[in-house]
Length: 433
Ligand SMILES: *Cc1c(COP(=O)(O)O)cnc(C)c1O
Image (cartoon, rainbow, N blue to C red; front, side, top):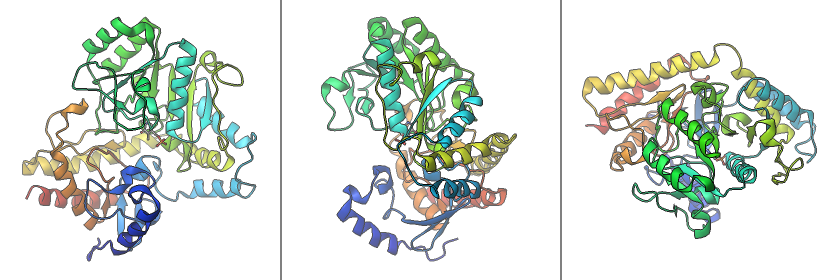
């Protein structure tokens, strides 16, 4: 698709960007540190396609890291955004747009009764944790290794090797006292969770999990483990938080809560909810949400929260997701694509498996079923690095890390996916050559 593949112009822009931004980027995952070449500077997107500053064309599976379930430049979203923007971008006062999106969401989600809009996934999680602490009067948080919850201090913490130690921060700049409030456990280990709760359960405000862990490979959990978390939270009076910033509106309109039929205490959303604009949200029961200011003592605010343009984009996006059959059609397309690549790899004897749920997939260079972070072999990332470059040359855009999942959007046609599978298979042949 890109015969004389070159990233000269991207390279020039990257050199310039390095003068302004640390690492030349405004979010570290964009920096292409674990793959080859300068970051691809994007000029425009339309439907399933992206074009970069060197005029290379790609079929996109990164989807802005998840939000673009309708593809790029969706006509209905654009129209609504223009309509809202024509009357001003922000007022710091309520508008009807927030009501419209709030109503649509609450009318179609059985797992929350009341919600608050914020401007990012990180903000949603940060607020949810504060709510959990405020409502329980406890301070400790249990999280799982391999789950990402945004860049708030208390959750940038990862466990030592297998033991339940006090959290060791994976970022500089986080006081030890904060890290100590976070207990990190491996996924899918009931025994260790049980033991931790027996010892410290009375101090635990909440257990937070990505019910579909999709930030460190795709570590699909058994429903039984999520049910176990629900049970234990109830037993110890801790709150269960489902961080649905990726899974919300992705594995179904009601996200993973709906998919697994499990009622968490607090849910967080981001990414898809804003239709490509910066929106996040958290929600819970009426009773829990009464703790939030101005009704209650847990403070949480935002200058640009629920600004009309972002609300209009979210509204136009979510309306399209409610069309009957939307998720079924998307999953069918995703399965077709994944199966086409898996079949090729199986036929050639390549060590590849592609876990998939709804329109999320992940290419694992292993035949094992991977459900915990420590099962991922860091050496397999060398294979991803080769794959990534071969895919760019062939006009396929994946997120620039082998730990990232891919997303199929409604804008991917069957023909797109047929071409993409063919290109991925060619690239796999180079990887395993
Ligand atoms: C992306 C993500 C976040 C952070 O959202 P931002 O909008 O990047 O702040 C939090 N939790 C999960 C599960 C995510 O995937």
